Image (tube, rainbow, N blue to C red; front, side, top):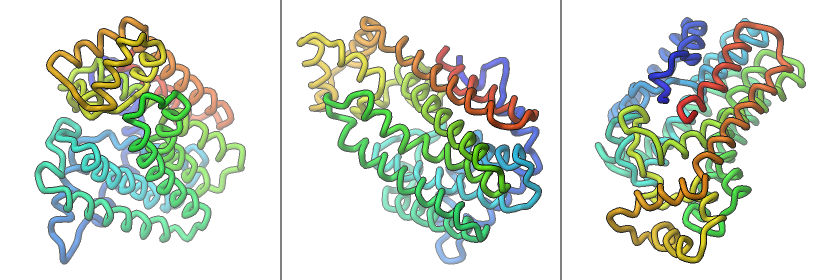
Length: 333
């Protein structure tokens, strides 16, 4: 089931509830992605920002702040900050991964070039830090600065681990917690911090975002082997072609016989891929129940996210966030 075809769309309910705030965030994003001296910056940024992403991360910041009773405007700056950090990492990721498609459209590095994508990503990181400083909240700055460093660390770890058959599930989880979950967790946490929420609630928000981010990434990795390009916005088998050792493959490698291990070593470690290898890889994943086990892990992390919300006040937004945890894994159930 794809996200867009699901009968229940919690992200749309969340967007409707936060419509005024998100309108202000989008206006702030457009205003801050401009450049008087380098017109390529808004060109490249707009290509990705306006590509129809669901804005989950900035919505999490607004939702967390509202859930904790915040009545100011700094959460708008923080939501825009989170989106800028996310967009910057996407621009850099597509260069590193040599990707040709993002959200169903050609990537910025394909339309322009790698240099433009890297430099515009750097510009957006700088804009993000300008925005968070404007909140005059040192703890918020600390959280988002640490998240930015953790994201970069996760990406570098993935470079060394993604094509090494010795990579196990613990290393995979460290990568995912870095490159994906760190921003989900920070997006939720800063919403509570800017609202002045008690520490138990701030921690609950962090725990929710962390588990939600892990569930989201595991589901995304699973979709690479069983999704449909028109609904996922990415080509099926991209991770395999890019030689990424994601969770389904890690599970299959752990159970591989010598012949199967030699196949994974040739295709993933050495990058010697031939016609029919993707089909064979998918067959091996099915043979060892790797896809089903990966799906179970995604559901377990979604359950952890929902459990974390129990420490938060009874509120319509809490229900929406609970349903959102189910929603991010609905596409693989």
